[in-house]
Amino acid sequence: MALARTGTLRLHDETTSREIRIADLNRDGCRIESVLPLLLDQNVVVGIPGVGQREAQITWAGARDYGCQFDLPLPAGSITAAMTDNVYGLNTITGAIRAPATFKWQPRGRLLLLGVISLAGWTAITLVVERLLG
Image (cartoon, rainbow, N blue to C red; front, side, top):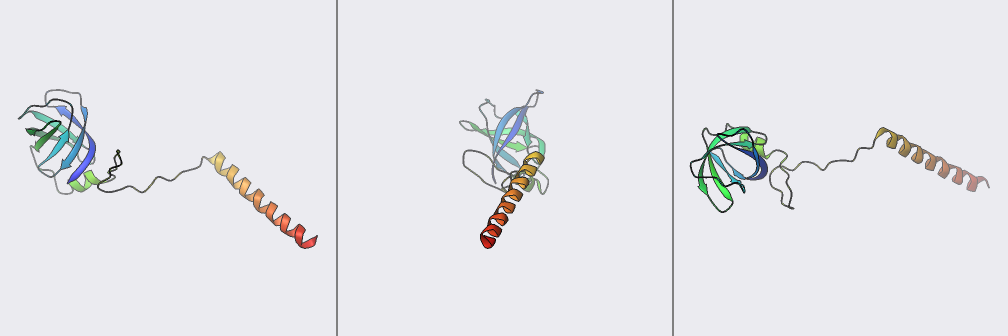
């Protein structure tokens, strides 16, 4: 499944993680994009949003992408979990799409807006009454 989601990569013998892009994902492995030079058969730990960290081995290398095979297949439901809320930049969207965020007014702004709407309503009523009576 095309995933195109930010993840992490940690070399098996290091403690620091690096940010990567997980391009494709299946239960047995994934394709990652990274500027970090990786070697064939190198052991890594891939951090997948919604799934967690998985130990893997680099099985093939392209120009800037690598194939990783997980030591153990992902459990059922992991692909769906990784796809949840999957929205990423560059005007390209795949997977589940989160509903657009709604603007929420601060309490002071809400009171001000309520006051303005109330004042406008009473002003409109006053103008109508004046025209009817006058």
